[in-house]
Length: 384
Image (cartoon, rainbow, N blue to C red; front, side, top):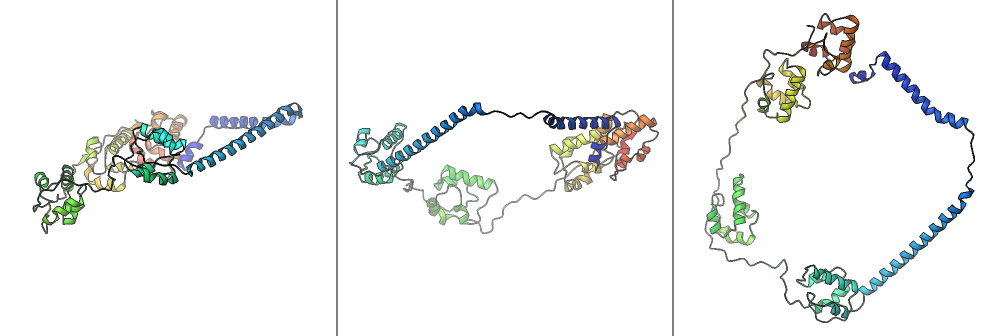
């Protein structure tokens, strides 16, 4: 309601200006209709445009015919390509990594397939097995099945699924994964990456409570685990050291004297909140009581209640505004005063003379807002 009152509070000169502006807007809005009513209607002759219109229609017809021809041609090309991919080949034994262009064409492969194979090799591509050749772009499944029995690779690379044969592991011995150091783990044949993962896991508070926990370690191959699992010994009830919780202790601060660092000691008050508290204090002219901290926008009440016992407000020295001298800008900039309230103070001062007492503000309807504005602001105002 107060926000609406801010916008509707106008002086007589301002209201006259608004009415004049609205009258001008109405005049401009109705002017086109008046002009069209007063002017004589004229009939436009379009006969001279007939030739251009006919020429435009003929051009549209030619474009449509051209599109139809292109679609028909594309359909024919697609059918021809399909026929090429289904043709029977004349294969012979070849190595796809070394076969020449003429040999590929001699087998009957289409031009686009030959070009695709040669481009792949020119860019450094290698066919390591038959499946690589089958994935070639432009090589149809029909043609691949015909060529597959004749593909002869001089060097075949084992597939990804081929099991890697690691170097023999040293003889295992009993060890506790919760206590073993790097040298002990290395003696078991664990790689540096495995050892690093185990050490990092323990440094971050991790513990192995059973053998299966050790099996879940990242980078630990199953073959290595099977080799050492019978020698893993873990204490039945290991006693792990846990940090005892220490509640944070705060020191008492005066809200009018505290710095940003003093406010940041509290849990829930960071740099941003501390900066805004100091900004609120400067805008008000000082805090009258510590409960004013709770007025900070977006500050959770739980945080305020938590830090309230550690704040005091003793002998506050408030910077006050003289309502007989302060300008409109100075008054409305105070966090507890609205624009229309500041304007009412100035207007009373101009019509009735200097204020005799701050308490007289209560006679102004602008301060009868049901929010206790007068009680909040009176400590920041003076007539001296």
